[in-house]
Image 1 (tube, helix red, strand yellow):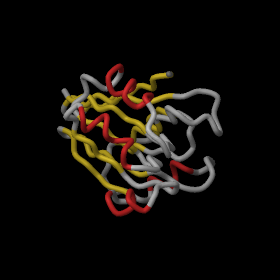
Image 2 (image 1 turned 90 degrees about the vertical axis):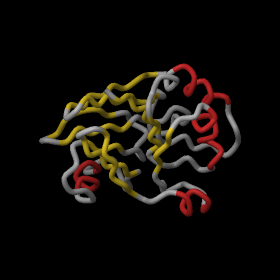
Image 3 (image 1 turned 120 degrees about the vertical axis):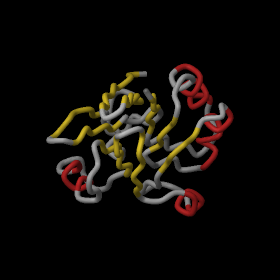
Image 4 (image 1 turned 30 degrees about the vertical axis):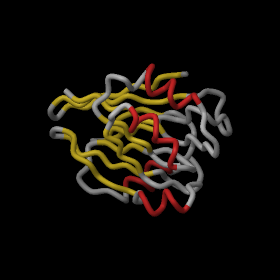
Length: 162
């Protein structure tokens, strides 16, 4: 079984200890961390790399040019027997899952961000997870992150309210 920490929309322009707290309190036992964009600056990932964690990330619409040069807009990864699409997303929240689904073929799950609203549900054959934002409260009244567990072909997730 693989455990994955999921985070998005950190929107940090300056270092903050909140990422280190998340890393040690919630992601210390994960096998991988996924950031679904809007890091804004690369230092956001330092706490995760400092723990020796593997990190997969994509670029979001608010990311600095250094992020755009370092990470793609979307990607697909395989964890055990599960294919996971990762994308930040764009536009308004209405129709978001329909838009991002068109960006992938043959995925079992899609991790996305952009809306700052946590979301976890299976629609059709795809599990969607938006971890929300752990730092920014625009568009939402709560901060959150996500966890995914993959066991063979099985995938499940949860939202963690901070």
